[in-house]
Length: 418
Image (cartoon, rainbow, N blue to C red; front, top):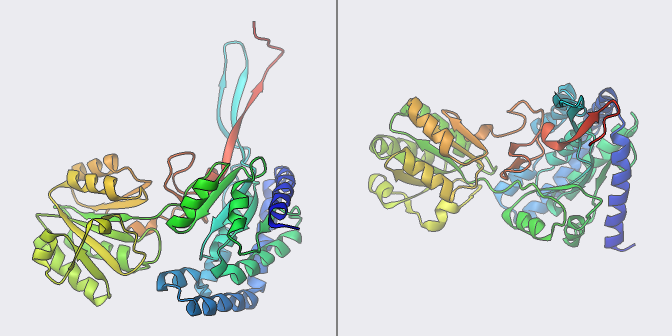
């Protein structure tokens, strides 16, 4: 069978599976998910062995430290994967919930009710945990899922998917509700993107090149997990100790992820005090600083920043730094250079905080907190299927509700339209 026919048949099987899933009760879905978590626990050794193969191949291929970090499944990350599924079990099933209800003068009752989307394709790179997170969220919301991970995580993804399928089958998971594309051919992505009438939604997670390719090829709706050019603005009214702590965490705690700070903006009135102190912290943490002329006048050891640095998602221990005159200038910089992902202000001024949160056009906007909290688990969603930088139909971390659509149910008593 050629690749085209193989992917088409996967889509056809997924459509049938989605219809079966839509009939399952919340209790039945939870039972399936619990069995999946148990199977991951039982297959720890196999999953770690598969991940070790991927890590070895990744190092041999010269993958960056950021990509290797995303690829590695530590004991804690496997624990988090298992706990993430169980956290999803504990969440309320949104399917069938009433969003609104109203009566018309003619007596018609109109209900707006959440329903599954249908078949969702997840195309992702590096992170094996996406295999489990996406599966759990899709199944809880009654959606069939087709997974296509990157070649760098092939063995890890296959091991995790096999565990999920085996566990789910023990509790009645419909056949083909969870499918994974095992080929590493790039053509498979193009074929998935063309499954009009079989795939209802595509969610790409990965680098800019992947997301642009999926968007260009897609003949079905796409929600983009785009790059994270995240900012922290240290206002003139900032608590400096708080700002130092937030900035260190946002940049250094895990620099290779999309919610890490990439650009630091500092108010000119606190720059002389703040910049040498954050530069000292960054030097100790191995962070390379790239600054504008005003910044480098205060910290001469910084490398000069060019225009592309303000657009850059480094995913590494590199930080662009700029001095700005006020909150309006910070907002203007973020809206022009940012990616509408996660941006923060550190300030004790309620007025400046309101201005920042109202005018920064990003999916998540923080006051006095690190951007590293942009995550479905940290938001109490149990897990996430991605962080949307689009505005329709979902924005920010995507959990259960974001994987549903709705229908109208109209109850009448024989009414006809005159």
